[in-house]
Length: 77
Image 1 (tube, rainbow, N blue to C red):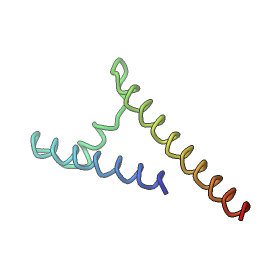
Image 2: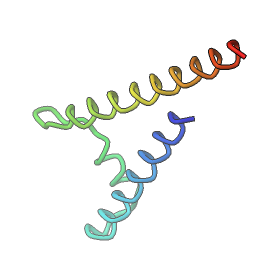
Image 3: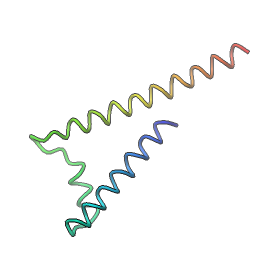
Image 4: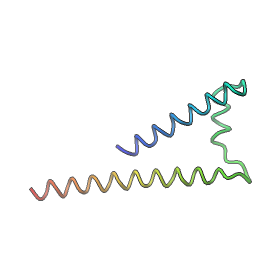
């Protein structure tokens, strides 16, 4: 469940930023979304993708840990 929430927040924030950029640069949202998510050589966008990956993995880890804990609690009753 946390993974879905994490990805939903990421997509919504990306679209929001793309809409703001489209308004500021008089462009369309799809073009700005492509520019936003493009990994250009020499840029530090790998850091953004790294933090995105860490956040996604931590949300998966927490979800799995939570489900294992629920299974243990059900089994101990």
